[in-house]
Image 1 (cartoon, helix red, strand yellow):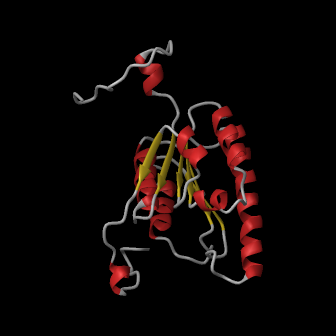
Image 2 (image 1 turned 180 degrees about the horizontal axis):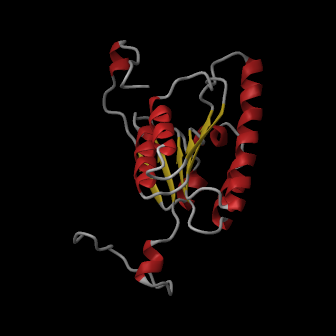
Length: 199
């Protein structure tokens, strides 16, 4: 494919500019490392363009210190690029006790309701729905509803969803899907995550 040239030009009645500026749904899934990292890299580009950014972290605990959060909050407050709002809706992962798991399910649903409100209000230009594939995979959030809401969103709102086991209907609907496959990881050799690499 020549540089900058699509391999297919659809007969959709849109101009090249209209097609180029169409809002995208992106999915980063798979068993490999780097799904959230790639989404936060996208957020850095969006910040540089002056876009308002909403980060919604599903499942991950509000107590966890995520390196990208601090960096993006500082950038968002700098007044140089776009604004950054960070929302956490989790208390930990799926292997915690059952009570905490039920709390996570409720927080995930509350988080999705907030995303829907923000999409309707066109609050952000980029939505990072971090680890959102998990609540759909576990049946906490209805995939059909997610696809319908994303299909009906107005304006130029881009959405990136991360997490393993992205549901097939979401993958089929999305404009860009990347499957991060693991070839090798230090945890395979018994090494735990470390500062600056995992968080």
